Image (cartoon, rainbow, N blue to C red; front, side):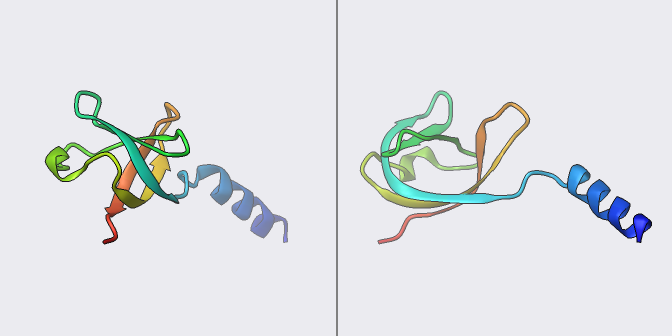
Length: 82
């Protein structure tokens, strides 16, 4: 039993940050820093392969992200519902 508990604790410590999701309206897009800000004030970093021309202020967005070791929210997936 102790081995199972130790393995569980070790697994939780070594597990990378879990993904989270957010949704809202884009209030600003910054092409220089590759970030977007949502209407709740949260800022998210876009991956380098994203076409910044396709993203605009006022667009509704649903995103999945992970928080990196610097505390930045890195977008892993993005959906623009119509």
